Length: 291
Length: 310
Image (cartoon, rainbow over all chains, first blue to last red):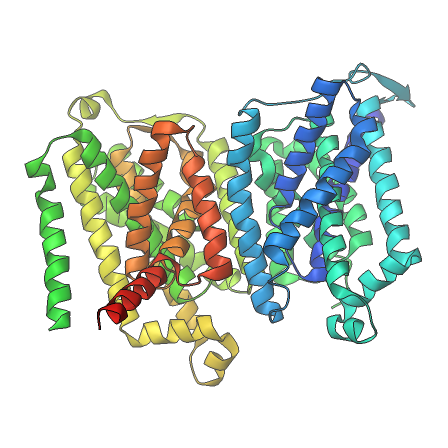
């Protein structure tokens, strides 16, 4: 009985944590490579969720099949916003660049919820495909189809991203740019294009995460900031800019949350934020990073 | 001559604002003015830390909220006189700032920005949980509710905050703060005790935010404690300061007037909240192209017209 509870709590933590990891990976990528902390990341996630909702209710497209469409839409969306708003700022000195891009993203995070409320009203929207209530038992632990699907999607997407970054020419140029912007430019890497694609990729990842959120929870116009903060917590846990670590830090946060939900109830979310502040103040290189 | 002119204009506006409740008893006019004054106080208090010192504090709501909550408790639940309560609100929020100041300023640049944001969110979640009930004014007070004393309190606090910012902008402290904003390392190297100056600015800013919370504690008929810590209190102040003119005295004032006007006009034709979207767009434009805000735009325009006269 006791074992069952513990195992169930861990499984729940892992499935929700994989989603956290996916949410954080995009943020970590743009920050690690471009030093742009996109605080509108949660807004991109929200828009991804609404697009999946639209696809499902209007065209009857299953959210899991709609994933590539959402990713493409958010990729283009991110590219447009990068071109218009951020591309002019990347040439500045690092400190000014970081601050101003954050402020621009902050401005976006004020605009998007209002526009979303206007387009989709303030109602909570969720997607419930036919398999959404179902689950199957393993060793006395129940695993829901939707959380399992979310876990698989998160793992596949993050693995694909990992392969993209380590095995392809594009990945090489991304890593070179993030290591040394000027040197990358000198050896002939098209830094501007790398930036554009990286930012758009971050938005696409947020959109994919949004589909998982709309399936497992719900979307509302105001939720962007809460998800941005969740992603920030994970990014800081992993060590800022570490893409691979973000996935495991996401699972860690998911497990911490689901365990502490038993003892701390409503304070669970505040606990994650408290950990975030403490790490930022006393161990800014992250839990696993080297000083 | 120019100083004297400026002084008499400001004095004239102040006298006019004092006389408004005697001239008109229209509640809509009083409410607009009240709101504008609250926004002036809130944004001006943020301007000290965010504008003059360059530390973008996205957790200002925490200090507004602590001030409002403390003032409400001192005034309604402990039954002490209102001036004491408002002062107590300011002090409570400054004491909190003192307690966490050193820790918060371990964070620099963008980490300060997100750290303060998360700090206020933690308080918001905690207060929604420990004080879930709405705090409602007793019937006796509601029966005798009048907007006029609320209006005067907001006027008083707004004048105090503007006066403090005016004093800072002309003082040695202000110079030190601006040097931190422009280049913290260079300021440190040329002998500015940056940590002490930042803490000082933080404490003054949060004290004034706490006083502003006191106005709300006196004004609001009912609120939920967590609602006082909603990020919108911070965000409104930040966009008002940036759009008006960051690090200036007149900027937040013009920004507040514009913000409230726009809110009223837009709410006639469009669903609520869109004025925030409009200010969000203006905010981005200011960050990208017009770092001086509306003030800069006005001085440019004035220069151009006066050049045309010659």
